[in-house]
Structures are given as C-alpha cells and as structure tokens.
Image (tube, rainbow, N blue to C red; front, side, top):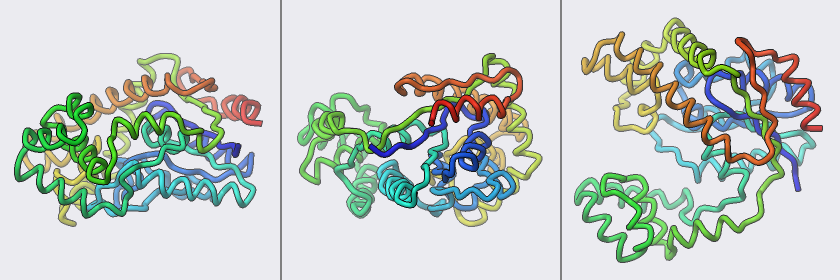
Length: 307
C-alpha cells in the first residue's frame, strides 16, 4: 500500500515548520489538512504558511475555495486524494499536515461519501427547506427514511439532519453507510507524527502569543475586508475561530478586547479537542517539545520513524 506521512496535533505546535523540513529532506510535498486554510483571502487568522515559511516546498489544498462556499469533508477527500495520488505517481512522499482530524481520518480511511459534491443542488434544497419548515419537521421526515439516525439527532442540528436526508434521498441510510465505510480498507498506509508540548501551560502560552501575533499582522483588517466582500456571520468561513469573534466586535456585539480574549479561549479549547482526537491514531510518533520546538531533534526522530 502507498505510504503517506501525517503530521498533526494541537494548534501552534510547529506542524507546518516540521512538514517543510521533512519535505525538503525526504523529497515530499505538503498536503494541507486544515478546514479553514482551504479558503481564499483568509490568511492571517488561519495561520496560512507564507512563501518564506514554505521555502519552495509545494503546498496543496490551500486557497482552493471561495469563502462564500460551504466547503465539506467530502469535497476535501475527493480533491486531496487526487493530490496524494499524483504526488505518489511522481515518486514523491505526500506529507499531510494539519489539525482537522475529521479531514485526516476521512482521507486516510478510504471512506467514500454516498452523497457526492455534485449533489449540491439537493443539499441547498434541503437546507432551504430546513430554514423554512424548522428542525422538528425535517427530523420527522428523516425518521421515516432513517429512523436509527433520526433518533440520535437534535432538531437544532441542521448540518447533520440535512446530511442524513441528503443520503437518504440518494437511496441510502447514513447508519448503513457508516457501518459499510468502517469495513473499507485504508486508502493509504499512513505514518502518524503528533506534535505537542510537555506542559499544557507552555502550549496555552504559545497559543496566546500566536493570537497576539495575528492581531499585529492585521487580523482585524483581514476580517474587515471579508465583510466588505459581502461575507456575513452565516457563511461557514466566517464561523472559524478568530473570524467570528472579531466579526462580532466589528458589528458592535462586544468590545474588541473581549473578542480577543474569546479568540484565545476558543483556540485553547480547540487544542484540547485536537489532543483528544489524536488519541485515535494508531502507533504514532509523539514529539513533545519543552518550552520551544526543537526541530533538529524532531526531524531526526521523524526521519527515523518514516524511513
């Protein structure tokens, strides 16, 4: 089976820098696994790597979607799998780098999606119907088509209700579909590297500093530009951490200082969720830094692990 490397872990733990170093050393190319770096015009708040940071290493799955688009995991898997296949065919190593666990798991697992990206018209129809009729009515409709799935959902969970109805309308059951995909062989032979810090306090301090740096680099101006483009808090892209809080401050819903503290708090909470997600990866190499990242040591350990 074709080998890929995965570098993941909580935010602000040096994943990008390690990925670039390994790509240069091992003849690889980076495939981003970040659900917000897919969006154009959202550079600062997503910590999108700069040309200086990429050091000439090709980076894929970045700036591939309009911020007006509701990008999905199914679309990511469809495109990222093609990118990885192309990299492998050229004799290079795909290095999947990012902290969006669902994207990584879905890409590696070989999971297929019963409702393909081309079913967007149906998705939009069901989304509009949910807005018009409400969650109770849509959940009632789902219970007739997929009662097992409907029993697990709350009427306010629009995204999952629409998704389940979309699959049911295509002649399937998301419950059966999930069981079937669990039995599929993996798409790639993945080697997982998890970056983290030995101390939670050090990680959280690094996250806070990163948010401060984003503000210095112009995060507020970036959000203002997106609002001028016509984006609203309802758009998926604007619901990202850093964007929704600053947007709320710009709309007068809270003070800017309060918004910044909220960004830091939500970023720390997100890091906790990422750490929990990483526990499901099989036989990973875990690299825990002390105070600051030691990339020389990390590269040595990773190279030995991957070769």
